[in-house]
Length: 168
Image: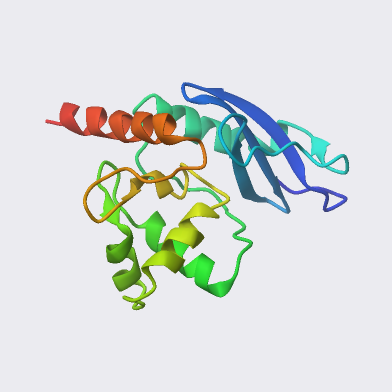
């Protein structure tokens, strides 16, 4: 995803859960935004639309939605505080088809009393799906907020559950 100018590049991807905006620069994917739901983002006028740098991200996302990919292998640029990045890395380790409570993620990063901060960091995840924040749920098993909306969170969890049930 290298760019001569270092400008942010972007493209769109139509998916079973709606249109997604993919962005990045310098060879790394840095954002995936839902074009519906809360926190909608429109490209900055300085960004350059170019689908070519996103060919591999598109291929892997399409394979994920088709049930053929469980683990993403993409160069990522995580732009956040050290705490947020630590949370996002822990969330990225949640296995496909499984869920973890916010408290479990807090314990995983050795901050057991930081459950609300973990929730806030999870809500700021710039790379949903690839960093599977949809796999983080409430301690009582309830589905909690999601940037794309709870129907999309349910759809992603159902996709992964359905694929897991097909494995012999």
